[in-house]
Image (tube, rainbow, N blue to C red; front, side, top):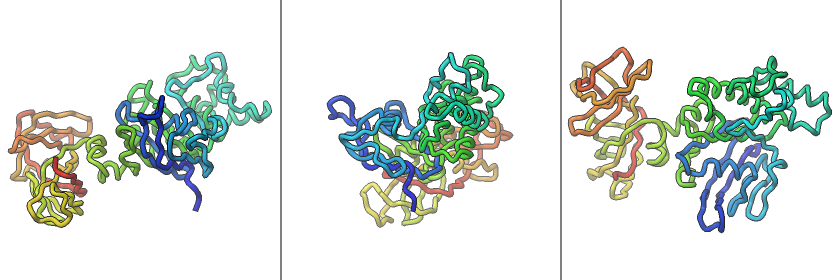
Length: 358
């Protein structure tokens, strides 16, 4: 079995005297050819983790391995230039006085002139910019500059590519298109990558695995599908996607009762008393996503529309239940109900996710 391209074990990183940890007990593994993403709120440690992987920060505990080789541990930090990593920065960091092809060839000084030119042309073809080789960075759009930065980072054939908020300076439409293009470029090139973003949709569009960080700790490292439908912690459930928590009474090991009806699933019974064999009327909080609540005109159960957000193909309705609690519902956009109107709803939850009652 091949070693992962990136393996981090029990990592701790601190600034200054080392008393205050920025990253604590952080572990993750990325397989060769995979794309990973780190998301989290500002100040959670995302960029610090990327800088530690790159070799710009020493570690106080734990170990970082790239392609099986130890590159960081307490008292030992292999320099960035010897780690076999490529870097793509927020501001692209292109040289304004160099043409596009020379920017891409800049990190290939160990090759002769003909080899440098050939490799640079190959990378420009990979990112679809062969026709722009003789232009200067200021003659390109923001998206084109980002692809030049990507081509330059890929030119030395790094073992691992690191990207810090690579699309943050681009408009929303261009970000969505470029994120899809970058994923395809990385997959076509067989490049493993870790990138940092605050945009969940961007992370889901690009990454094979996503990590959610909070307070310097990695709450969950998983496939996007698992993060959304099977969050490991309440923080992940609240941070990823949209959803609300409703109180639920545990009927038995498989059934819950909530205001909207009965839910059945593989319920992790961590009740308010901490018991693991239930049926005592214990309560938990159940996570409901917008797609768990379905608009159904034939349903006797109704709720009041209190807010609505139009998203083109659908609405996200905020609905007030009889108790005054609110839930979200994803409704096709041709069902255009007014705020204040009551509509029929029913439960359609495939994944029952519960947490200890707050």
